[in-house]
Length: 257
Length: 283
Image (tube, rainbow over all chains, first blue to last red; front, top):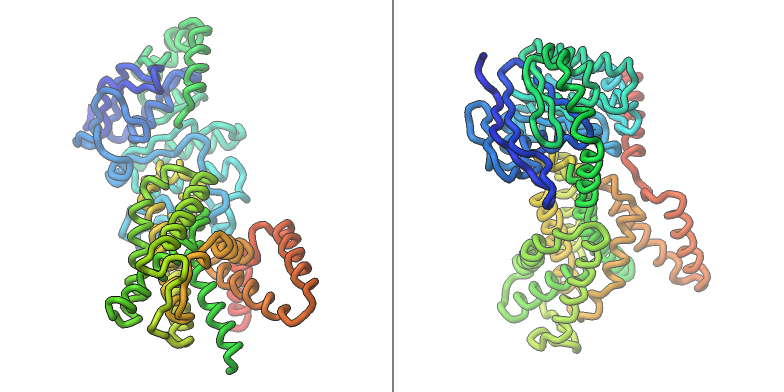
């Protein structure tokens, strides 16, 4: 395997007394697409939030590009190239498209390069270019996802983490989105993708991890995970009643994601 | 220029400075209802420095602003643990506490008020106001405005993008308080008399109204709001009392129809685009 960009070892995280992640390990090699799939409440978002630093893990170790980042604040991780496209896109709708993009580049001092890259994003997404000075509220869900992706790319990610990017998009846009993810990956970007849309995610990923109630239920090549019976068990097995209880508890504690 | 006209212009300048003291924290999502408290600190600190320490007024006015900013910085961390309406209540309470302290502080006159010996000319007040507006405008051309807007619109996503939400909040509150402090110091040295009761709820409320009426989205909003609130009541002063009621009604209707204020970003953008288009057809 080529050099690792991200290595998470035995991560555990809690919401109050409810354990959302327990002993989860995950690796992403440079140039890889790794997907994390699992049912609702399996801990996928918590895993990404822990890697970014928005949730502080109770235990475990994070190594990014050879450095121990376990205790780093969020902004230092982003500076280093660990960038998240958050769940639900979280575009700032009362700000312009261009301002949203600039926000992604806020750490960077190389303003000329930022300008050029914004130009590149406009070339790729002409819909955004046309309305660059309009409020982002004028964009459709799919276009907002493109903007969220562009905003993240302007932070110069080495590893791009995406939390349910296909959520609420039309099938056509989902198709386009997955093509885009593959295109950026071919250009050398490493990607950690969380998806409910398991079939599509497993189709484009190199490797996959299946989470079940905060634990790793299965991991391996995306193709072998897709073909295994363990995947279905992770979604349907573990009594569904148990899943609902954990979900309920998490909500009552208040989700931080 | 008559003394009356000069007085109005000074009032407008002072109101404008106070309005920007409210505008900066508001652009980062904080409704500061205690701005009069910060003005009082600037006023009393500067007045004490010229009266008792013999400082020149320019240095004292600067120091007044700095004192207000330092106090805001000191209380910002605990205050910004609250959000939204609770933060507004905290600023409101702070303003009341500050006013009450000066009311009982005998070294600066207590309830009898505090005469200020050194006088500054109207031109100084107007120049200071111009300087404040220019500085805030300069700030609005930097990325800082975008960061403030991000913190205001979605603090969570601002955090996920790696913005230091807490530091930005502290900065907005502190700089706003500093501006208000300068405004208070100018007031003290132009009118040569201050009393704690002046820096009360009404002053804070009016200042917030200037900003809301003018609009929080554009950097010119507070200026326009302060101008309307200062000049229209003056124009109505000689007329029948009913005109005030009509002015109040106008404000209610206006805010109902245009809650985003008079100036919006959309409006200024349209104008920029129109100018760009007419420019391209001319060339």
